[in-house]
Amino acid sequence: MRKIKAAAITATMVGALTLAACSSGGSSGNASEEPDTAGGTAANQLTFMFRGGDYDKLAYQAAIDAFEEETGAEVKMIITDADQYATKLQAAIAGNKVPDVFYIEPGKMMGYVYAGVLADLTDYVGQDVIDNIWSFGTDAYRFNTETGVRGDSADPLYGLPKDVGPFGFGYNTVLFDKLGLEAPSADEPMTFDEFVALCKELTVDMDNDGELDHWGTGLNVVWNSQAFVWGAGADWISEDQKTVTVDTPEFAEALQWFADLGLVEGVTPSVEQAQTLDTYQRWMAGELGFFPVAPWDIATYNEKAETDPENFGYDVIPYPVANEGDDWSTWLGSLGIAVSENSANKELAAQLATYLSTDLEAQKILAENKVQIPNLIDYATGEWIETDAPAAGWPANTKAFLEIAESKGRPLPGVWTYTPEWYDNFWIGIENVVDNGSQTAADFVASKQTEMQSLLDQSWISADQAKVTG
Image (cartoon, rainbow, N blue to C red; front, side, top):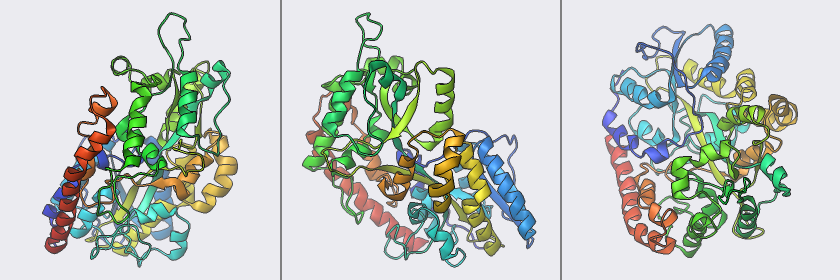
């Protein structure tokens, strides 16, 4: 077994803002002692290392039981807390005890490929399987090691999706009803102006004590501004991933509009009010009209709607866009299932990765328990959206999630470059634009362009160096 070049991975361990942007949270890994993560040595033995909570474990246990019965394999499951997973996987790689099958984040894939950690699954996964998975779910794990290009359907495949995670937008149906407001369209996006006008109607003093207690929205700029920038026709990076594109009028206008929701329009809680009770807590308390809604939120939001129906209910809608007729989009995350290049049972491991990603019964369990939308296109767009999703308590307009998975979703800007520091740099000093207004968006993006470009150039240099040393 050849040693894995851990140095080639180091560059991908940085950039917490980007690398945390995968779709699944998860919570409970109950192991009190460190398990042996090394791959199986006997012909039928495999190890599978993943992160998640009880529903993930339930779904995968069902899938693995069926897989073992079908193939005669023996699969050891190793589950960790979400917060501990990256550290434990890195320790397993450094210790040359890489599991046969394991989760990977798209942002770390390139470093792992150059370091010789990941197996190329192209020859192990049938085209019929690929065709029935959301294309983003496979594109996120395609990589051309010669050109550094990501996501081309002709490139080698280094993972399959555990899931795809659409970062949707929602509104409080109960608050709209209380104020006698017409619900937003489930199909057509509002314009920025329409959104602001509606937010103003939602920003009220319902207690009549002279203090605002409900607001139109309250959005975190780091995780929530992407859809609005894209909805204005702007972006952080060029299509070929080589050029930073923040210093444009369209970008500056979109960022200033986002900042002015609080600074000028007053439709978000102030910085001081957000410190007392953050905007997520205010959304859960029924005090905000609009807020992000993603699949990993559904179980929590449903519980809140059941226990506090007088204040909280929700549904999903398209993100607003700058002008009527513009196309809307949002970011789409993923977590991948990969196979060790050094697995003694690579073909069987690839078979397990495919099974975990596409087994119908496991997908049904995960979706029923509101962990993710299904990976399987035929099931998601058929039986699931028509009968299973409503029966399980998914929101009325759940089809918006499928739209994001199919065509409206984009990767976060830093995920598909070798290192994400260039993108993380954008957020340094952003409070001067959105919190206190001491800097205009136009001045801010102009000040960022050169520095971010330098970091992006360095990312490409690092990728070339990893290519050589890997």
